Image 1 (cartoon, rainbow, N blue to C red):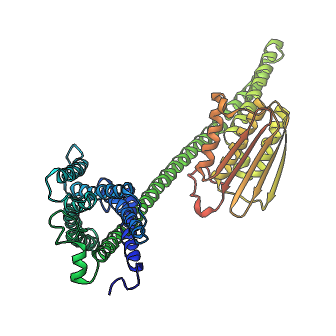
Image 2: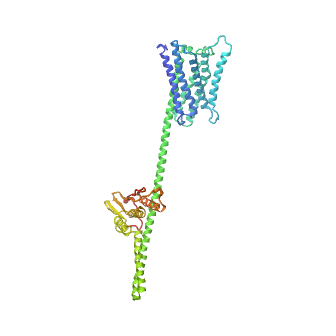
Image 3: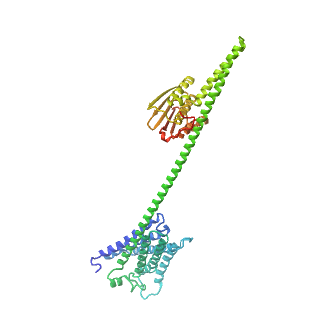
Length: 504
């Protein structure tokens, strides 16, 4: 017979009863703070309130029951507090059902209004039952407990069952996981049976409590009604928590899918960025090639045509000297003219070299750099210490041209702005790349305050290096000099052949 172990059976039943609904309430409260896959937060919050408060109520009722076993009088305040907790929890269950079934476009809180209204009706019913004439004055606390079951628990459980059945159909309609609809359906059946179990209240003077009560249920079945309610609470809690687990897996799948989509979009953006970078590099390469080709053409025309004209003019002046004889004014004028022709020839030679140095095409990068350093030493008194390391080799003509132009621009900047007469330069040949480093200890500069003319020169260095797939870093601070570091890959398979005019 139930209860043969003394009061231990009741303690276990009430504890499991309260723990089940309390766990369900916590699970719904946690789910309400996440993305609305199980249900919207506005729907889950009343159900969470019901679970937490109803579990707390069962533990209070267990405490009062244990006090009765020990003949301890706890007084009416605790009983009234228990009834308040019970009423609020059951009103929250009604609010859950109303919230889940009401249209989404309603502009006022129908759940709060109905839940609060049911509590007001409950209080009025208690007052009214004690104002009516009775042959024997009823026990207020027993009637209040029975009314809470009849007026709040019965409709609350029924509404919760209907709401969960509605959510089950919605889950099927939205083609969510089939197991989710099954969990909702089972929980709906659980709340439906839980609603029916509320018919059996504690014995009270309120009809039909004298006949349908917990004592008669125990006599008829041999099992306390709390066992049935506890089993239903465990059943409901299991399926609702199971629903949260299913939704959590679905949420993880969605997050994974979103992350994969984000990664794909990122890879696509990176591919597009790399494609644009390659296009920009090709455009820069064509610009550099066009510049060098134009320089070569101008250099060739200056050398082949203008220089020949000046030479012919000088020879004509020499012949004219023989014709004029010993006329001092005429001879002096011829000498001056021939001197101007020679000076112009030197200027043209220097201009031709600057446009396209013959050493770069004929002898290679290192001899061209050495010649350039000699010219700067003679013309500007700039001493540059050149160090060449690695296995010296001929590079792609465009790579050699880019390195030569970077050095040329760097030396020009040192002469004009560094206010120093010496610098160091290191050229290192590796198996897959060539590295150029130029360092001076001059006045340096602030790159944010750089003049426009000098900024264009540095920008040109960047563009030339990027055009051949290289990298350049320019570090300078006022008073600390300037350091230029250039790295260019020299794998010939990755460097297309230059157009005619730049071949060695």
